Length: 447
Figure (cartoon, rainbow, N blue to C red):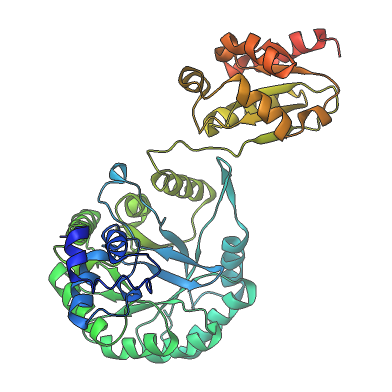
């Protein structure tokens, strides 16, 4: 189990030297207890203390980065079994799998699709993370050519899947120093695979049947000097995956088996996994998910689910406050005030676009609360509207001083007029009625 701050403090040198960046050893101990500092920052810890503290203060699921710089994604560093307890932090990387037996044109097409395909939802651009390349041919030369084709067309994180170190070494020549994930080390070949991983500073997937065998293999690879590991659970069915992944996560989170504290790898291209595996992997602890190229419909479903699961359930999704344009509004366009709760924003924006009335949306910062909740909590108020008008220079955008506020904020209309000097119109409570409202009421406003 994780140590408390005072237990950690007892193991520290108590010099208050500040060399760790904190003013006192107690402050450093508190950060270690919260998983916000690394034991290596203390230069005076002996090896025994480092061993004890390292096992109890690091994140229970280690952080592993696939790739380098902009062509990378982070996995692991999770702290909870259920997202409502805190949140999940690092969305799983989803990579399309290709084979080195495919034609140059097929490999290029899949690579370009991953490179360019973006799905925008709730103000975020969603996309797949990279390419997994399988050495199905068994030939190092063919594998290297397939990897070179991917490299020619995109700068993406890669997973290199080969059984032989010769094929991996040939492929890694094409990748340079971008540290792809190499797959996979087994109890039979882990020493050879570890040598390749160390030579190229690559993270490495390990594969074994059963939790005890995974623990042994992780320890063996760590002893060989490879610390960046992900675990392939070798599931025989979806039920097997759920059981094993959940058990591993629980043992890692409680630190009952810290040697299982690595991100999980899922190859969802197996026939018995394909249909539900991607969804299952997203919600049940997979950090690297390999899939066949998905249809547009399946792509949107997978990316949407990943976004939902890896959004903090304790925080509403918010838009950035500001002045947004719908269409090409001119100086006589209406200005509609609303909150920065994303669902409210996109619902209203959709109905405004359907109305074909060019207008401005003044989004005020209600900390992500809906209109009714923000009004009740005092987050939607006349002072905020006044300050937002000034901050976003609304007066310079329109030749009138008339605002339209949501129907649920009607009780604030008088106070907003007094605070801002703008005339206030009360819009409908239901956003679906905004188009009809604008066509009927805005034309009556003297500008």
